[in-house]
Image (cartoon, rainbow, N blue to C red; front, side, top):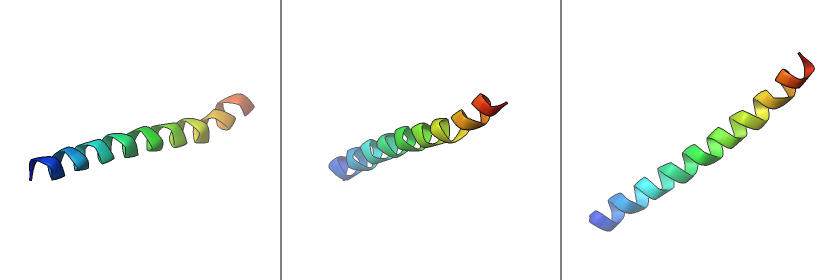
Length: 34
């Protein structure tokens, strides 16, 4: 179960990184226009 936990942790970290980049790019054009 340890490897499964590590795999979930790594996946959640990667998901958070992608979500953060997505939100950053999403908010970027709005800040440029205003």
